[in-house]
Length: 124
Image (cartoon, rainbow, N blue to C red; front, side):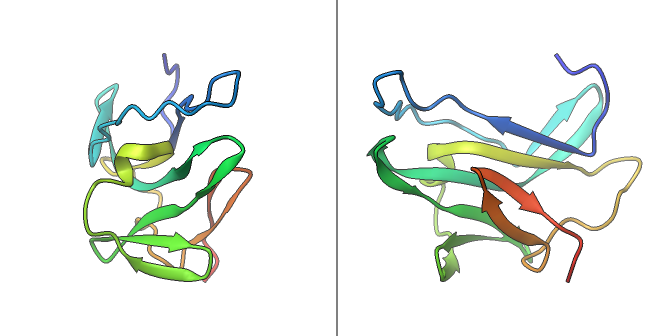
C-alpha cells in the first residue's frame, strides 16, 4: 500500500522463476490509473522478449506525441498493437492531475533503460 503521494509510480513484475523460466502471463496495463484520488498516466514500459532469464532482450516503449514508440537497441519504431505492453517486466506512470511537475516526457526526455529501470531526465 502506498503511504504517500508520488510524482512517479514504477511497477516491477516478477516474470522469472527460481529456475530461470519465464512467466508469460499477459498483463493488462491501463493507460491511466488512480491511487488515493490521484491520477497517473502510463508513460513507459519495458517488455522482455525471450523465453528465459538466459535468453532474450529488453526493449523500451514510451509515449511521444500521443504515439507509442519502441526503442530496440539503435532502432526506433512505432508500436502497432498492445502485444509488447502485455509482456511488460516493468511500467512507469506519471502524475497528471492537480499539482503538475512539468510536461509529460517525450522522446527527448527518455534517456535509457539502466539496470532494467526506465530512466527519465529533464535534459534536452
